[in-house]
Each structure stands twice: as C-alpha cells, then as structure tokens.
Length: 420
Picture 1 (cartoon, one colour):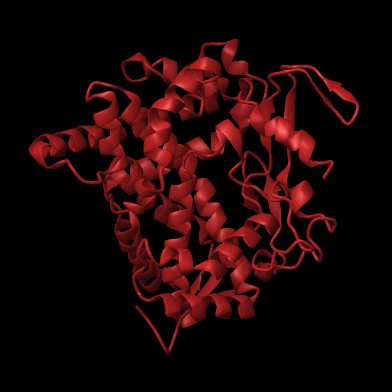
Picture 2: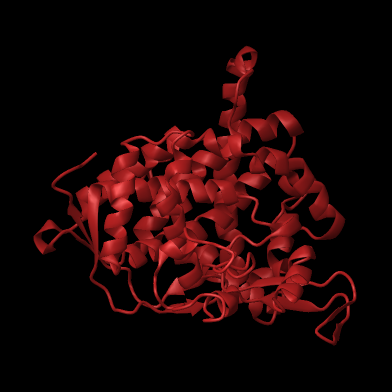
C-alpha cells in the first residue's frame, strides 16, 4: 500500500510541464482556429480547466460513446474485409508488418467519432486526400517524442529552420485543413436538419451546439482526439492481438464469449463481454501502451519522509507496479482470469495497472477507445483464428508511447464453424 500514496499525489495534480511547448507554439500561430484555446492536450492551469469543463460532459458521458456502437461495428467489419483482401493466402493468410494497417483502422474509427465522417481508410485504394492525411499523422507521431524530449533548438533559430518543427507544422496544417472541411460539412448538415436535433446526436454536433458554430472548440477537440487516438489505440490493439495469438487457449475462451454474444453487439450486450474486458486489462498490464505519466506537483508534499516541493516534475511508470510479483503473482503470465476472481484475499490494488490515468487529467477519450477496441476485437475473434508468426517474445521500446521492437506478423485463418 505504500506505493499508492505517491501515485495518488501524482494523479491528482494537473499540469504536464513544458514538454508540449512546441505543439502549443504551432497552434498559437494559427490564431484563426486557436484563439479560444489550444485544446486539452496543450493547455495548462486555468486555461486547461476552462476548456476541459466545456467539453468533458459531451465526451465522458457513457451515452456519448454508445451513440457510435453501430457505426464502429461497420468500421470493424470493413477491417475484417480489408484483412481478407490483403492477407497472403498462399502463405497461410499472413499479414506481415500489420501495425500500419491497424493505424488505418484507428484513423477510420476516430474520424467517425471526432468528425462524424467515414473517410475510406480501409478501401483498397485510399483517396489521395485521405492518403495525405494518413501520411501527415505518421509524420506527427514520428516527431512528437523528439520535440518533446530533445533540446528545443527551434526556439533559438527561426522555427522553420528546424527540420522536425517544420515537418510537424506542415503535417499539422494538413490535419487542420481536413478538419475545417469536415466541421463545415457537419454544420451544413445540421442546418438542413435543424428541426430534427431533439434526440441523441454525435459528439461533433454536441460541441457545435454547446459552443456555437463560430467557436473553434469543435475542430480543436476533433484534432486532439485524432492526435491522441490513432497510435495509442492502434498499439493497444496490436499488443492485445499478440497476447491472444501467443495464448491460443485464452483466445479460444474469448471466442466462445464473442460467438455467444451474437453478430452485432448492442448497448445492452456490451456489459456481458466480461472475459474480453479481463483480456483487455491483462494485456494493458503486461504490455502497457503508455510507458509513463508526467505531471508537475501543484503543492508541497511529503511522501515517505521525502519533501517534494511544488512545481517538481514527477513520473509514474505503470509497468513498475503492474509487473511486480507483489501485486500480480506470476506477473509475466497472460492470465485474464486474475481480473475475474478478485476477493478479499486476492484484491488487486486499484492503482497497480491504470493506463488511462485518473483524476482531473484522466484520458478524455477513454470511453471511445475502450468501445472501439471491444467492438473490433469481437469482430476479429469471431471471424479468424489469429496466429503469431513474428519474433517471440515481443519486446517494447519506450518512447512517448510503447511501440513493438519487431514487426507485428500474424496469420488470419478463417473459422470453419462461424464467419460474419
């Protein structure tokens, strides 16, 4: 229990520190869009609190995510069809270096949620505009960690002389133009159905209604969701598929639950996917997507006799606790059942494995990411026996997020007894 105390202090504080400075600077240069706020990813202090309070209700309510159950299942089915078309049947249905393909799925999913639009990432041939957006997101992810960690040379020279800054600003401009276009389309649709907005509406429509058609908040939040929801959700899915593939008995047990739940899940049947949720939690414990959470302590605090002054940057590494025998016996074994059999004697510390953080800065897209992962895993496991053909064990490199050291190589073998 001693470890809970510093973690709680760390979680409860708000600021991330100055690491996002380059991205804040890039956004502020586009004052036409970011005059109200630069978004929850880059704001600090009171400004962060103000924008978070304007968007939290629309993004954190369970109903907001459940609005997309049918749409995300359509994306998941398109991903199944994409795999069937692209896999190498002459080599047992292999999909080598599968992670970029997963990113296509997560981009398609997050644009549905954030921009109320299907964009065709899973078509055999991407539209040139969407291919440009996909390439721009790749550049942003590659440059994010270096700009976050390296010495900020861009501050001491004209910024565009700095290669990573220049590439990031150009990539961000592509996303901005794409986002502006989609928000304008959403506003035009709302004008046509203005008298029929009484029921549940999309997240983008909620943000437009709440903040006004002239507000920059809808596009700012859409971009934040895209930047935060492509590679993180993609890597989480990749790690989960790996853990299921190298543990075929667990995959089969999950398949039984998936087939029992039926072809199409509903808001009423989602809660019955208990074994899936245990698999997801166990995968995040064993192969976490986020290597560390960084915060600034907002008050002086004493932890285990150490005086830590306010404004000290602290890091919480989830794997330190989630991969300790003290908290998880046989910690290096993929055992979803440990999450199903908690008792007073087998009580898991609530802070021992927590990938979405907690407190004021808990991931604002948590519900969407969890729903997206559940629906696509249900569809994949219901259609394929997934086998691992890559290097074992899969090891991770820790950067801004954890990434696999080796290509994700799978075989997707059609099930004989059931296909949807």
